[in-house]
Length: 576
Image (cartoon, rainbow, N blue to C red):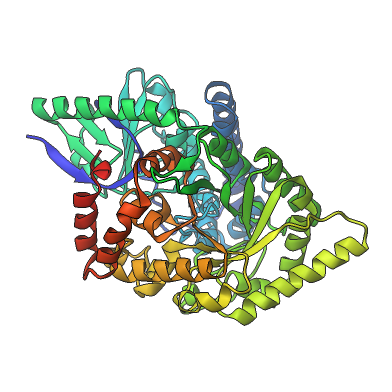
């Protein structure tokens, strides 16, 4: 009899193949001490050397077989292994605290993970925490003399099933044999989810117990569209999903034909479907998927890998690359958005009881202009290479926006006085993610050039529910009438002042929300690149005027479930 597992639909597609369990040995470490520090230091050096050789080999394999981007996922691991300060920190623990090499490494990793391991799913800073865990696991395996699972041993087409999948695992994938991914842990924006999209692998993550339910060799159906895994399916289920897979393949071909097309509703209303990106490699993906611009550059990627802030010149070079790559299409760069769940080793932030409501984002930039000013100067210097828009995050009051805008204007004038060319058509806006700002959108709209609705944070703040907390995850409801009313209020306020509105949260890529956002007049949908052609295809089939009554009914509904039912009943294109 078949079993059904539910998880997160992390990468579109359907795959039917046997399971290949990628489950590693127990590497747990208890408090351990040694009286022979020299012996422990030698063991440490040997394990680091073996791990470095191993990761370098994985890097070379990935570059040769999967390409430059796949190889890049282990760059953080290589940097950590070559970090002399890390070596020194571990050796100090061995010598001064008389720890074994295993316990010294584990303790050092835990200290660093206290800062990094709770990274938000929407932020690429979590790659450093992932890298630390991956490196620690590999070093411990050498110290303990145990072997880790080796994806290169797979010699037949199969679906990987694991608790989690590390960067070095993905870098060893063989395209010929990996049919899909299923994990106990993980989220939609974890590194291997991004890689699975790049490699076009169906993926379902966060199932919680896949490794307990699935046996090696079990036939699986991975439904990466709906977030389902069927274990030991019946003949009827296999037949059904084979038909769905064929339909999905046809749709992919249809969507592919829209890559160079505009996004226009059947009644002639033009929209932009653009991409959220965190690295230059993401920009390449965006262009390949037909993005009409970049709606969100997460500038944190420039700050995440170093223990010091990037120089103004380094930042200028990076922003220039983004603008040049997009060849005149608009690129919206969000200024540094850290704090809350997002920490940097280069900035010592205070401990807070409630960091999500504390010292973060623009609040840090305004309090520490020595961080914000160089970034703004770099953006201004790069502006002559394309169509740049600058967005300030976490704006709560009009005074904050005015202060940030004043700093920008001051740096613009300084650059001009220095003889540096600066574009004169840079749009300056704000990320709208705080409910109070949404309520005051009419006031903000008089002074900003645009809004970008950060639906992820807006929804969690609106319902006072941490979206990373599984106990209150049910309150994260994109289609709730309260959310819809607030979004409509923001769009109406902006349009009354002749300003445009984008949305850059997960809601923008949700097909169920698309008809409502269209009818409300959202100008720009910004999302993961892999969703762009699907959303464009949907918009091209819909009529905004005919959807107006649906908006009226949705904002006057009582629950998100009612709204979803309305959409499914009245927009048959959704069912396809």
